[in-house]
Length: 427
Image (cartoon, rainbow, N blue to C red):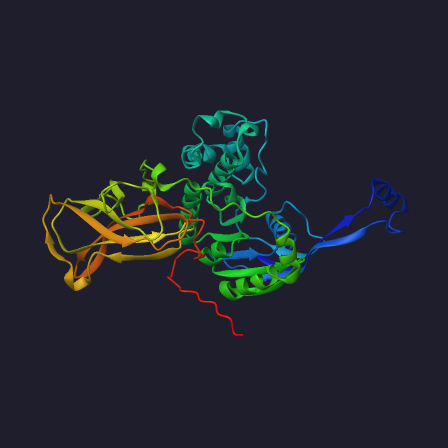
């Protein structure tokens, strides 16, 4: 994507009569004021890059994306886009509300350049990923915003795009589907797809983007490595004028979680399609149905309390005799950012030999230092293959859990570092 001196100007009329006058005067007199949504913006995105665009509301991000996708014409400047573009812009764009979900799949995919036979080949994958089920035959005007996003995203990622453009569309989905979407974004990113991602979430941009572009009042004010650009974004975001607006907003209710005792059901996120290694390729398999988190008293839970100790556990079935075996686990956020993990032992203390037919249970005891949020856990088996350690089998996002909110907590962000604050009077 190559953008050179791109600008988009809108004519703003105070009333309809002024618009009519402008037609009759044929430009000899101006009855409107100009609003430059995008002004003199230039940048280049290379094949395979993932670039985030950040900025406050009204900074020109969405207008810029619409020009790149071809749904808006620029007032001036040049733009060059090479490759098939698949876009998630305004929720439901490209969908007809009266058509069924099935009809909209064919409509939307055809707009993205697929033939009917190509859509036929992808239809089952689109339906399966969206998790719409029988509602696929209902008009999309009956869909919730989350269902509409699921279907739109499923179409967008299954047309094999060269360029994927996402404009805040994932924010309406539930945490489980968001994680599924971000996992798929990681897959197509590794496959070499160029991704242009707009989000108000600095953490999301930081985790998935190689570079970032900062927009403010229609102009590009910064471009470069993600973290320095986000630092500039924070300065703009929390300027004096912005803080005044924030103080006028109603406070957010952060104490909506019911008591921990009300959580008793246990579930496992079904993300087996994201497993990185074929189940039949090597000599051991993690039993995805065995993944669980328990209290020290043995109760299975999926809602954890901050500061409590828990045991994460899974079983491994050995189909072949393996040597120098150890096991692993990794914790991740909804966007896929790896928070940390561990092996069951150091490399020199790995299990020397495990015989074919053995079944082992792996337990990881941990103190929950995570703050409120949704998190995911991997499970993996490692063994010596041809003299070096190799990943034998892994379950990606095999389990999801929630850390419940505590209204009196003072720790912020993801991890509680046990900081001890102290405030004293100097006078």
